[in-house]
Amino acid sequence: MAVVCVDRLVGALPRCGRLFVADNSSAGGHAGWVLFDRLDRRACGYRELRALNPHNATISVIVPTYNRPQLLVQALESVLGQTRPANEIVVVDDGSDAATATAVGNFRGRIGYVYQSNAGKAAAINQALNRVTGDYVCIVDDDDLLALDAFEQHLDFLSQRPDLHFSYSGVWYFDGLGPPPPSSKCRRFERDAVPPEDFLISAMELFPCVLQSMLVPRKCYSEVGVFDETLSRGQDYDMILRLAARFRGAKLPRPTTFVRTHAGERGPARERHRATERESVWRSYDKRIFLKLRQSLPLLQYLPARSCNEAMTPPERRRALLQRACIMARHGLIGESVRDLYDAVGQLPGVGFSKEELAICSRLFSASPARFTGHETLLREVGIYLHRMAPSLWRAAAVGAYWRFISELKAGCVADAGRAGVNFLRLTGVRRLPTLALEKTRRRALT
Image (tube, one colour):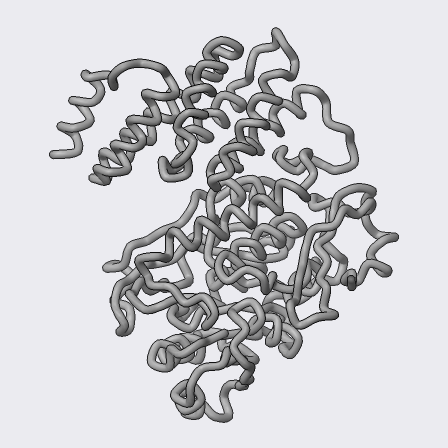
């Protein structure tokens, strides 16, 4: 097991936390979280990273690709057309047929090209990270494109925020295999901006951004370790969480990336799947990521803006348990979520729940109804338990479940609205949904 740069870090770091280490001794590229007694994600920046001058910095771009030559050309053209040019561009061909090499040949002299036997996206990125030399790294999917001023936006933003290590943005979604339409005709998607110290918790609750919308110092990637090559899907999310646990990032005002939606196949050769199967495959890997996180991330890091140097108080422990329960539920780990929820209710008997704790409970039960599939009986038992042991949490849970039902109804997702409505009924024990609110919502959705 090889720990990245531990020797030179020990003397400069606080006393408590954990470190991501990578085992580079085998082709599998396994990686994982390890407890480490002198690391704190709130004060983890290194002097050389904070001294990085964005205006003078160099940028390396990594483009992993597998059998998408036409889309790859569009992606490379968007990188080469930047108002602030990249200093280095490396394409890693993950075992494609000859058409990909031919497409890349058209850019000879302007990009680097590396071929490897098919091993998946994570292995391709790891290969490139060992080669690139830029101060910052941007990783671009072969079917997406960058806005032409993406790097200019990132560097201008980072130059105004010396407290940050990396930046990220929202995206524009577009359909089809051709170039994207003007941004005004694309679907804009972005999460609300959060303070850098709260980014990890926010990112654990909801997928925060895509990797290609981020500009990250190369040394940050060196410190958190390799991409997990055991993940055929979700390796980007896993890496974003590891970066968020160690470094500070913030959101740009405007999107920097065009994300393409199309019907093409996904995944490495060993696990190809259709676009229609994307969600189910994603969910299975999402559970793996968060099960690993639950087993390794200290409970205190589920608290906002929290230093690792102090012991948790009983109220903090209760809130941390509720927060972890919320995060686990949002990623389909319902059994783990319920255990944390029951543990939280058992803390501080007789002490009421704070406004923040009630909001966390509402978000737990506002998770996608698909996450609760197969746990219908457990949901009913949770409702009975909360009603008896923590009525205020039960009411907050009911609000969250009903909000999900209303949201799905407004969006016209009839099947999901039905599932969410049934979940609300199971949780609350009532026999039917509130008819007045339901009628008002139905009329609003139709106007």
